[in-house]
Length: 385
Image (cartoon, rainbow, N blue to C red; front, side, top):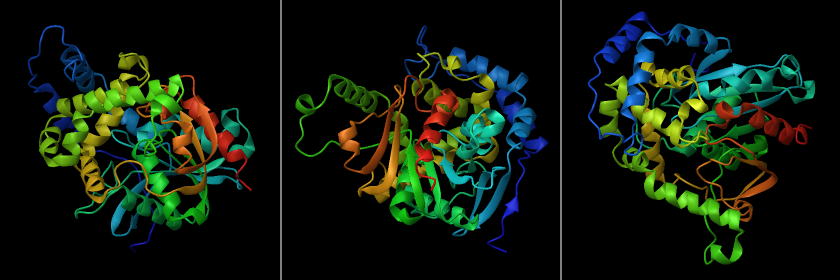
């Protein structure tokens, strides 16, 4: 039946892993300038070491087993087979919470927070903070089917998530996300405000009000945050231009070369995290490679990038265009790509919680899971009834 919910277990075939190892062994490395490091996009010396570890030290079967510790399902929503982690809480009064990843992330981003959210008592927390946790793979990412027709933008992804939650039997729920997950969750709140208990964002987008001069109206810190965002938009979005204009061009190369795929993805974990330029200060090699391997074994890098183009064409790539009336929490991490002023955000969201976090960046659930976990718990405490 099309509406059946089926249990899912990750199992990558030995043949796929053997092919991966063979390709890694045959990597043909590009030449670079002496001492270039990451300045031109990729640190070849670092990537050589990472690829060697991927080939001889990384244990996918161990990581696969760790992911399979979580309950997983697939079901068909609007014609697409959708995969999700569905970790039900042992607490009967738990609040359903859908947590959505971004690019270049995956369900693996949330491994450190799923169990504490679902079973807080087992992790030193309070029974009343329990959630039934749903972590979908956005269609075109991971083990979710990729759309094959034009028009599947981030708003369509939100509709798919809404359909998934309905299929799972959740009439009222909270939503959390960063990156694409923040945009999808925002559209979800616009599409179905009657279903949404609250919206928690760890990346928030809001444009400058027309006619406002930031030099006259913003604090020094707010102006510094805007200047950092301007620098990023000037020097850090080469990937974005390619993925919004010609995603298939990059997909051919990245679907064929695992080393190239690692360079494309790991460079973003370095640039967008609170790591001081040293990516292994925030992430282990196993964490980085689990995420990259998910893209490789599902051959989903091309379909994941297409979300950029389709959202750009639909005019949904960026801030939302209507106001969210659902109670909204904004957790601002210091190394997030965008940190708009609260007053700007309040024009688009009903902000009831605004937290300036002491550390962390774009991948908060991986970098500083305890900070994100506590912020989510604190926000929803006042909304559960």
